[in-house]
Length: 68
Image (tube, rainbow, N blue to C red):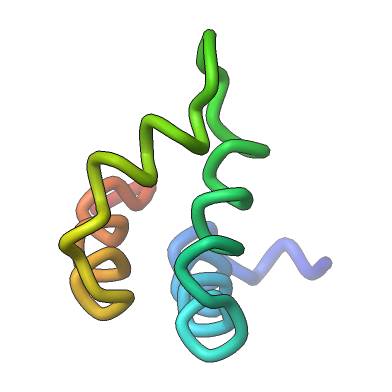
């Protein structure tokens, strides 16, 4: 990867891919894989996000972007 590529640009691209390619269950599994937690993170995230649509989840995830 080129050093000219910013972390923000990569995060935006990844979020766009998530938005277009993953369903809610897959997105939660992805979060579980990248988030260090104890217990059943996928179940916890599923319970906490059961009323959210993918657009809202992506919007909230962008709040945690590096450099945001």
